[in-house]
Amino acid sequence: MADSGNCYKVRLCCAQLGITLARRPVNILAGESRTAEFLALNPNGRIPLLQLPDGRLLAESNAMLGYLAAQSSLLPSDRFERALVHQWLFFEQYSHERFIATNRYWLHILGDAEFYAEQIKANEAPGYAALDVMEAVLAKSPFIAVGTYSIADIALYAYTHVAHEGGFDLTDYANIRAWLNRVEAEPGHIPMSA
Image 1 (tube, rainbow, N blue to C red):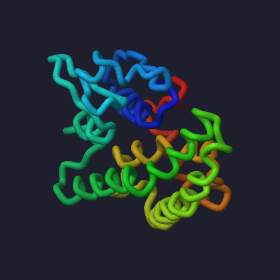
Image 2: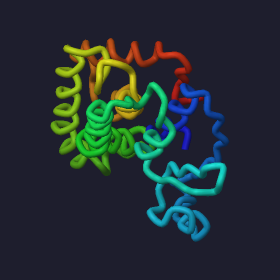
Image 3: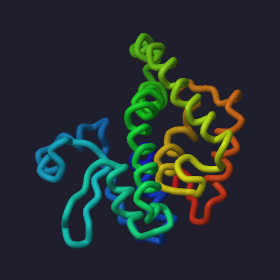
Image 4: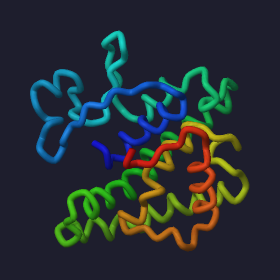
C-alpha cells in the first residue's frame, strides 16, 4: 500500500541499504488483506508482509526493520545502543503511530472526518504528547535513539513527515522539522510516493 507509513518504512530502509525489494500491492480498502490467500500468509491480515528469498515470512514493519538492518550502520552493534533503538521502535508503535497514523488514516486515506470526529479529537492530545517527547529529545541530539541515523529514525519519520495529513501541525516543532530535513538528506532517501 503505497501511502501506508508502515509499508514505507520497509521501502525506505531497503532503499537506504541497497536491498532490492519487489512489491506486491495489497488493497486493504478492498479487503485484499482479509482473503483466505493472504490470511494463509499472515493470519493477522495486516500489511506490510515481507517474504524472504527462502520463502520465510515476516510481519510487523518494525520487526522487518530490525531484520533488514541487522549488521548495518542502521542498527548499532553495541547491546545497549541497540536496546535504545528498540525502545524507540516500541514508542513509535505504542505512543506515536496509534494516534498520528490512525488520524491520518481516517482523514487522508478514508477521507471521513465527520464519521471519526470524536476519535480524531480524542487522539489529538496523546499524538501531540508523542511529538512533544520527540521534540525534547531532538533538542539534544540530531537523531532519535543514539545520536546517529538508525531504524528508529526511519520508523518515526514514516508517519511524522505526513502528520499534517492527520491534522497535526508541526509549526511549533522546530527540532522535529530540522530532523525531518536531516532524515531526508540521508543517502538513499526516497519519498513515500516512490
